[in-house]
Length: 78
Image 1 (cartoon, one colour):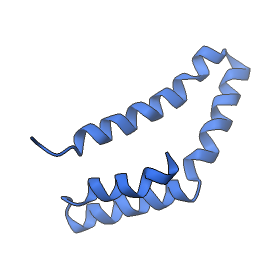
Image 2 (tube, rainbow, N blue to C red; image 1 turned 180 degrees about the horizontal axis):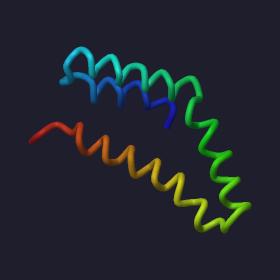
Image 3 (tube, one colour; image 1 turned 60 degrees about the vertical axis):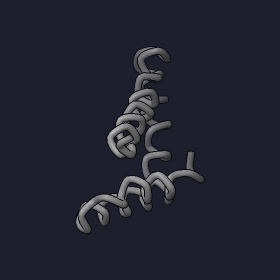
Image 4 (cartoon, rainbow, N blue to C red; image 1 turned 90 degrees about the vertical axis):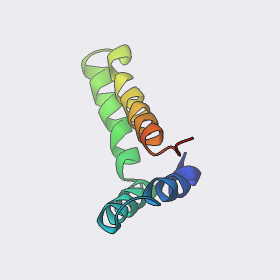
């Protein structure tokens, strides 16, 4: 997923106003530098220790859901 992130950010920011495109670029850099990739596994592990693994796996699933929603909203209209 990391190798594709710049392409996803570019595809989503092509039609954005300049201020939103800047925000998209900052978010892409945050992902490239490790940002959430370093926090999500720790949070998942902490929740798995406190509750159950099934409950903890909802966190990475929600991350993928947010990525899917972003991709769906940035798709090219046919």
